[in-house]
Image 1 (cartoon, rainbow over the protein chains, first blue to last red):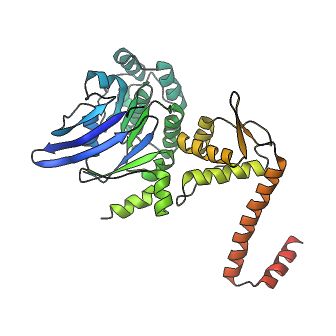
Image 2 (tube, each protein chain N blue to C red):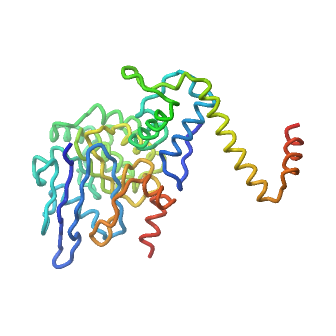
Image 3 (cartoon, chains in turn brown, orange):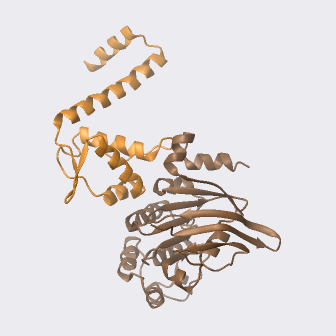
Amino acid sequence: MNALLECNNLTKKYGGFPALSGINLTLERGKIVGLLGPNGSGKTTLIKIINGLLVPTEGELRINGVNPAVETKKVVSYLPDKTYLNNWMKVNELLDFFEDFYDNFNKKRAYEMLEKLHINPRDRLKTMSKGTKEKVQLILVMSREADLYVLDEPIGGVDPASRDYILNTIISNYNENSTVLISTHLIADIENVLDEVIFLQNGQVTLQSSVDDIRMKEGKSVDALFREVFKC
Amino acid sequence: MPWELKNDRPIYLQLIDQISYRIVSGEYAIGSKLPSVRDLATEASVNPNTMQKALSELERSGLLFTNRTSGRFITEDSNMIQTMKLDLAKEQLKIFLDQLKKIGFNEAEIKEFIMNEVE
């Protein structure tokens, strides 16, 4: 089957500064992929290009064979690193909002997840803690039946017990046609869930490998390898 | 038995070990049906493709078999399970003996020590 996402010589410059330089990357369907790199390595820039929020300076990125546009937004479900939802809205109103917006939003799935995480659908977003807000946002994103899920720091503010539940949600929602791309610094927490990892450094891909290949070759976890490669 | 995964070895190899333990200990009964890949992956909190890889390896070794219509089963060959059990026991014994030698026991001392402890 054709690749889900392809980057060819993808470059993004802010002024003269290259945030991404000449990235070549292919993501297949049916994978859970970790996008890893130190602060300022280009993770969020790449994610914004995938979602059509930034345009490449050079090169191109294709999802299902086409450049990011309206068609790709239908099949990409995006969790940004900052919240964009209206604070005054109740959770059930947000669910209605998403249902209006996206054909592939599965409201039943969203309500099930809310219940599991003990979130009252009648609560307003502004009354919630930071972590609970993040959970709501992630539930909205994971309740879409998309081809590509792009999660920018999905579990940073979430307590460890809920983290486990969220990771299990990602595993149990897994299907062989869709891929999940997760950017995070909490490598140890997610590495058992990943098929492969991509290391970004100074806007370049320095490694793309399966988790088990890294463990086989290096005799250490991805977390340990990251700490070694990016030692300050 | 809870799933315990360490950091320094490939995950699929650890899954193979742990599923083997469950089979030889009888937790997964001889000839019985194995849970689905997705359920096993969720239970162990691992990637479904990694679990799939482990199960394929176990199938190749003959410990599991697939019935095309009804799923994946534990072998009905009790000799094979018995052999596996002995192999795993030998592996553990070797680790144990190496540790005792590291502490400074010689073979005669180990023998005497074990006999005393077992009684």
